[in-house]
Length: 122
Image (cartoon, rainbow, N blue to C red):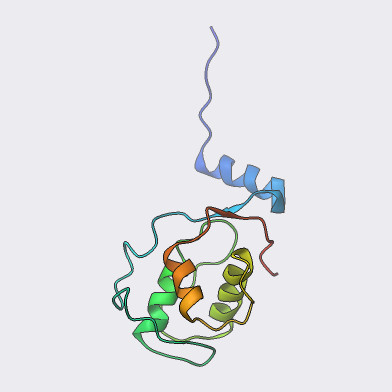
């Protein structure tokens, strides 16, 4: 009799790490469903140094991305980690990697690509 083996989450993670950057980064969940710092209609232009609830919304929405990029603290402070993640998301969507969250970037935060093969900067 042959037994089927179930992979533990640690085994799956280990396999993903071993495969490296060939795996796409994927949006883990429907963005915005758990992000309620501001309404989806409030989309101010944000960049490095910005603070407030809209920055927390950006951080929360960017955390819907799975894969290697780190989860951002939703602290409402647009610092270096937030800027790097936004630049990466912009690159994944073919936008200029300015790090500035404006109309097109807000749109992709709420409607992310299904996957991204661009390596996250180390």
